[in-house]
Length: 413
Ligand code: EPU
Image 1 (cartoon, rainbow, N blue to C red):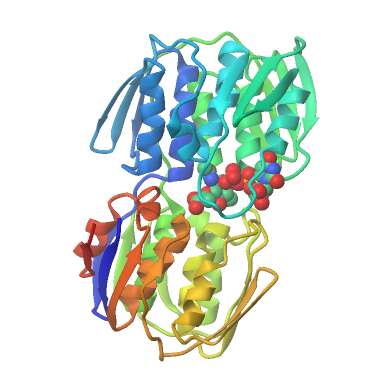
Image 2: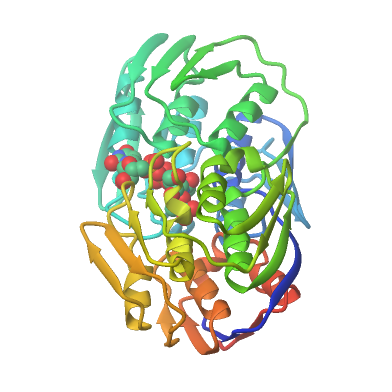
């Protein structure tokens, strides 16, 4: 899908955050662990979620998705190899592996896909599965994981920090009598999933990079859970407000955004916030120096968005991307648009400027696409953005939300 954006107008009004993509995906997969019905509220209507729903339906689950509420009934769930094309369209399909290992002691799945922001191996996941008593093979894009030996208790340490591997290893460990996992990483979205597991009756305790689990007899019931709000969506609209108008962002957990909010305040941008609301007004700020780090450090998912905001600083700002190897596309677009920009070793140095010549752009990943939209809305001129489907994978109703704020966007094809 391509869009045409007419930029330079005032973007003004209120917008409410939807539920977080990176919580919804593992929550939907973990709903299979309920062996019954699960009601999820505040589920974003995004393409990645629809792909997971479609996989659940292939597995004979009933899924009713009305508005932002989803009822999943997995009474008829049975084992099937996960050889569905949806598994390769998205990254988060890997969460089915851990869930299947707990439910069926095996899993065959097409290797996960997702945004091409780096090599994105899954070796940390696989090593954890091995520690939990499984072995695996990979043949022709199909990963097969099988039980090798019965393990009742284990104490394992993830070899590196990984959001996905931490949850996946945890899902896979739920059939054990007990486990301890060290070096785990849970962002607010992962913590939301741990809370859900506890609601289901799995006593998973998390503190200081460690999870502990001791199995108990489960009593399954209809479980209701509300998905945590999307902190990256909140940052997206906040940066849009700072670039182009006056936006109040509602239904946000500002406690999850402590570092980005502190950085912006310190730089002098016009933001104010309470526990669940952020106000962002068009402004200029002092240069910033940011390095992406694992939570609670600066989120890699907001890096491209802040790159666009750097054009509104009075001087040179820098961004070092430390999590993914291939997430610097926006800085090349800025350079093409007349911004002075130096890019080397995943570090970009951007000179603030009012002289931006908009071009036509192509989105290469979800957050890159969102950053392009902000760039186009914030500057005078007409722009085409191709590959905009990437953005619809992760932003709920973004076209309507932006139009309601006064943004001029047209779908071209
Ligand atoms: N890594 C490995 N081996 C592994 C797993 C990860 O080397 O087995 C590396 C990755 O290649 C990366 C780093 O470790 O360089 C961190 O990866 P992590 O596993 O933490 O990230 P992820 O689970 O692949 C999730 C989100 C991403 C988000 C990151 C960091 C989902 C489906 N994806 O990815 O979301 O950027 O955590 O917060 O939850 C996005 O929303 O745009 C997005 C890409």
